[in-house]
Length: 479
Image (cartoon, rainbow, N blue to C red; front, side, top):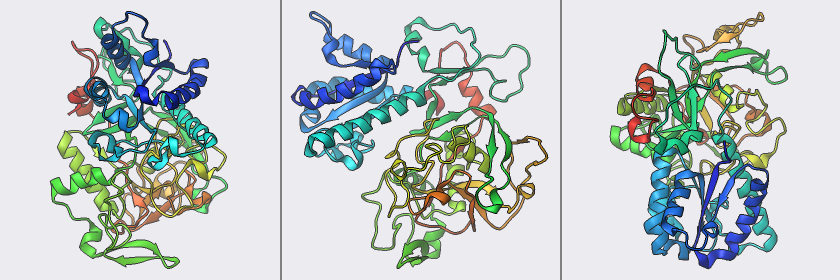
């Protein structure tokens, strides 16, 4: 299998900054981590349109060098951008906008919905030479992480007859049998085709988390985390990022839904040196009545209770005909560690620059790099509600501790508080550990609590994923 293609789109008036970006990306190409495609590869007499179209069809990542010249280029906006957006919607292409020069990029609808780089949309050109190299290094490292997250895990190879017109896309598939996914097989069954490591449902990405066994809890944390013990989870999909204000607003409008904070007239927020109820704080006014989500539409929604989070999942289920829920505590902890039981989602060594922690407010989802599975914001930004009731001890939560492996624990049958995981923008390193177990009443809401839906592997989902006369599955097939 060849290296995944990274397609670079730019205006020739930005060729100097683009050349510097390409130089950084060539470091990954030298390590055979990517196949870099820039239009300078088109030889004399080459069919310009055809070669660009082919490169986009092969691409796993597209890097857009954004400037006023880029945004006003007829060729780019007529030929390249529509193809890239279509490829992103149907095959999970990741688009990385890099703001090269000051321009009104956030007024362009399709672009404003994407997370721009450098962070906070600061143009490359306003920095010093050393700052530009620092920014380009961070962008290159993030692209390397994206490519790793798209990599195909080692699975048993199956014989697959492909439509040759689509055979170039075989590298974007994970091929698993129903048995691999924890579904009992009866004789010869068709195989499940999953495009890349994620699927697109209702305009949001869900990352495939393959079943496995891991060490849950901690031996050196809080008492209710002890002891560390073996837990097995079945396969599932988990939202690649927390739910954003934009996504939650669609739900609230469609369902005419009012959150518990809106009904109660107050939500928790850090104010005057303490966490206290602030009158008028809700998801639309996360810090209080004078605040707004206008400039944080791609930030995670906050001021949502456990009941609000479950209602969002129920709405998704009704809208798609699939089965959504909040992840169990075990599912969340397994996915956060990338199946490797690490201390934080970014590894064993704490580095506050790798996540939104010890800060002052939320950040746009995806601002920081993904974990080993390609999931963003599993450490910091916002705590995330889990489906479980909280229990002070593992046995009370249904976990086996006598050397046995606990399979798919769902927590206690009843309780008075629900589990939240991951830490937040407010929290220090101890509380941002993957094993940390925070809990609170399900009707409460706070400016540092959010949600991330989990997609169950049900018959309805399998019916849409199973191979048949058509090869593969597109986003349109999922709805």
